[in-house]
Length: 249
Ligand SMILES: CC(C)(COP(=O)(O)OP(=O)(O)OC[C@H]1O[C@@H](n2cnc3c(N)ncnc32)[C@H](O)[C@@H]1OP(=O)(O)O)[C@@H](O)C(=O)NCCC(=O)NCCS
Image 1: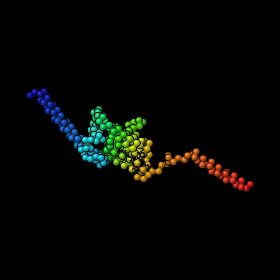
Image 2 (image 1 turned 120 degrees about the vertical axis):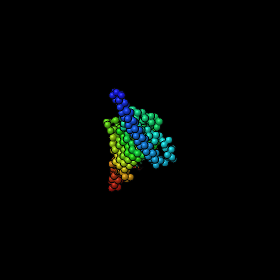
Image 3 (image 1 turned 120 degrees about the horizontal axis):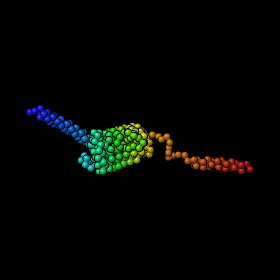
Image 4 (image 1 turned 135 degrees about the vertical axis):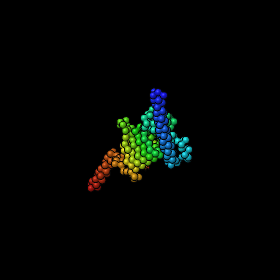
């Protein structure tokens, strides 16, 4: 056999071995990814069973809950996004949005046991980060204000509840165990163990204790009523003086 043929055989064997190694590596990565996905989905289903009193079985949650479907799609899309497959990641998240009405950017980082209840209209932005065991209801947004670049979306701690229709806008932190009331608009950081309500959202409970507001916006003194009261007092003063003068005469 001349040396040229030997070289060709050597190269072919080498390429085949390398190809097989790459194939094994890829299969291991896919296997690991699938294992993790299955574990994550199990936790998501368990979280729904725990937090939604209407959920009757794992099969019902897995097959019929759009929040769970959106999360499964997101967990796949996020894996692709992390590995630089931006187009296919986005294609998966947009397809999921079409079926569930829930839009989660593939870049968003979501922890374990996340529950998206009802779900329609939920939007979660690219740089949002969500801790473990959080719950979000329909119509809620974890978005940006349009003023920030880079990190634009909120970071949510563990065990946080975001109520229906709430908008959390900007790159700040929502502390562990806090609650954002339905329809609140949160524009700045909320500490741990707090309840924030209203537009713009204010902390009304800290560690379960009522937080007194600096300014009572409801019981504001009425200046016209105060003036009328002063005039009434003056009139009654003058009337009594007049009565005294009449008596003296
Ligand atoms: C905020 C919420 C989580 C309750 O939290 P909490 O810590 O138990 O707070 P409380 O119920 O004691 O309410 C605290 C104060 O906020 C007020 N409040 C509660 N929810 C509010 C809301 N969505 N908007 C405005 N004010 C609200 C309460 O009237 C109370 O006012 P007060 O201090 O004058 O008494 C709850 O009211 C809520 O909004 N949950 C959202 C759940 C949801 O979206 N469900 C959808 C299911 S389909």
